[in-house]
Image (cartoon, rainbow, N blue to C red; front, side, top):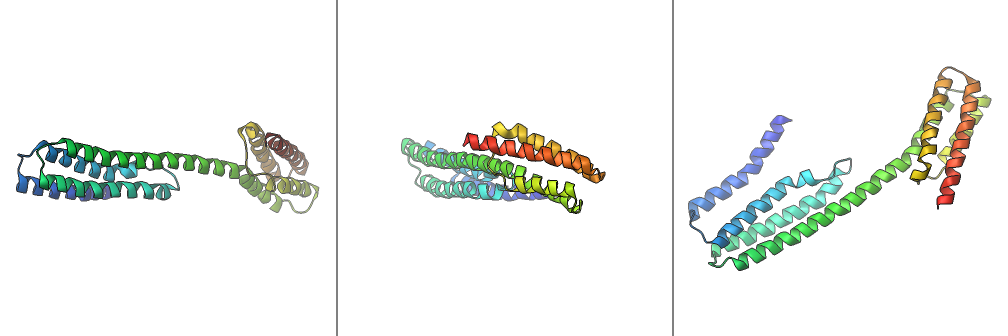
Length: 226
């Protein structure tokens, strides 16, 4: 991994090395302010292009979030590079027009980048919330299914199946006001699994009944919150 990072760093530095070599060898160091302003903004645009991956929200959707941001930074660098080269070649004596144009381009880029980052934050929060909502039904159902498969067809198995059917068909959308009940369900699931592993059908039956009560109370509260 360290070798890959070094190679990427070298790749990033190639543009800077070539650009600066041509800039100083062809034009020297005696330039008006307009040229140095463009020189700075070209470097700034390239720096933002390189640093954009570090601005991407981490997680499984990183590629999804990263593509728009990278596209915006790449577009900004391309526009800035062309505009900067024009100002460098023309080299106007006054710097005001150059500065205004460069600041406007950078401002448009900043608005587009930050807007997308804000949108990504909202999308990421919604995705995380959706995953949390799925966890209660998905994980609980999966664990109950595993217990059912090891119980056979006795009375305890029927009670576990009832708890499974109830939770499996429960509303996925949740609310923090029922978090205590969902936590209690997970705790009771642990006791149910422990009892099933010890073939303690009486405790399994009692635990399954508690799960049904907890799940029903959770669903009842959710209906009241709608």
